[in-house]
View 1 (spheres, rainbow, N blue to C red):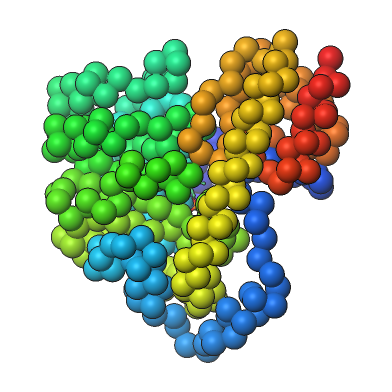
View 2 (view 1 turned 45 degrees about the horizontal axis):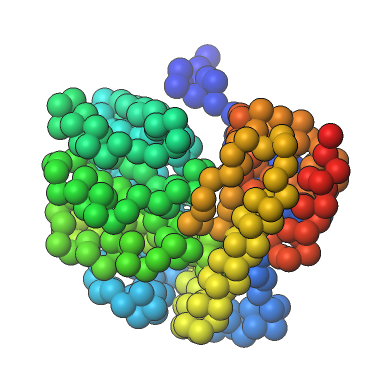
Length: 345
Ligand SMILES: *Cc1c(COP(=O)(O)O)cnc(C)c1O
């Protein structure tokens, strides 16, 4: 009889919030939607009977132009989730140590587990920051081969200053996988996307799912030196980015003004959400973290009650133990959230 592999026995499918909630503030997506006519125009040139370009060259050139980087350093993926999977499955051998943080994006430790890496889970400080020097020491003393983390961080909404990230990269031989999914919301100067060529141990991950408003397309990008890029391109699935995505993403990313506008709309919405929450001074909220992302993390020992109450009011946020993570929505959505929270007892 066939037996499911041991490591799969307790796994269940990823299960985002189901149900028809009017207001979705749970997945850190952009609220800026695409005009259907523009979408039709964007994909009208797509060819479906042939396989797509395995390296998504047009798209990569447009992305390179938008961020002023060299297209030879970019690998496109079916979402950055795919790139995380490809990197963790290929750049490390079974049993090798990789450092992940708690709290951080759960996909890292999930894939580490799946590929039978030895995930060393480092707990963050009480204020959810990272002690970089302690981490450097740990990596170097425990033979850790890789480190993966998000900066800015999902779910803490905090950013690590660039100089600290550089010190980490420069102080270790481990491969540093730096997930900058939310960097568009912070400051361009905090990004290492333009500096990957000067490091032999750095992969920067970016995504079109957040600030650029294209989560539905599934497009992530890895940026690294040419040596690492050659290997990334060698190990990924040959046709990993489909023709419609390549076509549509290239079309939208070419419009730099629109991309800037999308980013700024979400940044303004985050300011509105953050200052709104602060000014309400709700007695059941213990702490509101300063955010350099498009979401706000709040600490409350009523997290579950508030989460359920908001769902009853058709507002979905993300429940995380004694925290709630709330994505910035439109002004109307943010206001609906404030109104609901005011009535929470
Ligand atoms: C949302 C998110 C991503 C994006 O993943 P995609 O597969 O590109 O949609 C990557 N990293 C973090 C930390 C995220 O929160």
